[in-house]
Amino acid sequence: MRIYTFLFVLILVSIFDSCSSSGSVEKPDNLISESLMVNVLYEISILDAMSTFKPRNKDFEQIYGKPYIFLKYGVDSLQLAKSDQYYAKFPRVYHRIYSRVLEKMKKTKDSFDLLGKSKNKLKTSF
Image 1: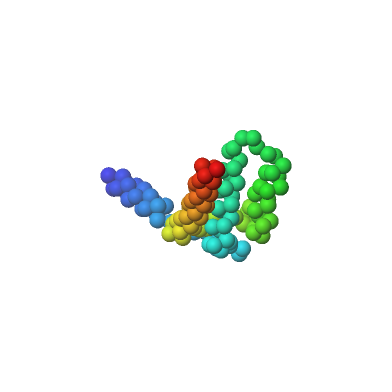
Image 2: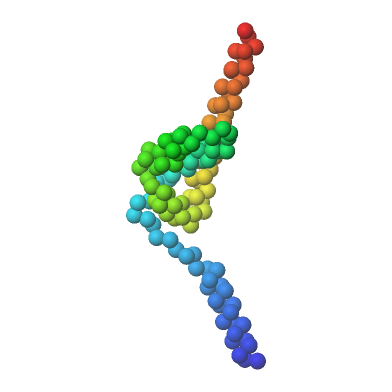
């Protein structure tokens, strides 16, 4: 009976230990700043959304795709992945970054909605 109690306690300790370890991620040497991360993620989101439309222009994707974004902001895909992994370990920071991306997307959508309304007003006035 003592061995079962010992095994039970050992299993409980190992479960609690595995749950409590945060699997710490070291801060990358070339960590992307939060504001730059917002800009990069925003543009990648826009590109991903654009790629769902038909007809797809392969030349556009090759010239203005993700390689262009990486070149524009001076980052690479590995740096982005490591920075994203690092920020994901800090939920408040990660939430703040993605909230800012969503806010930026809403502003863009509102601008397009406003443009559409003014375009419709011009059509009806003529």
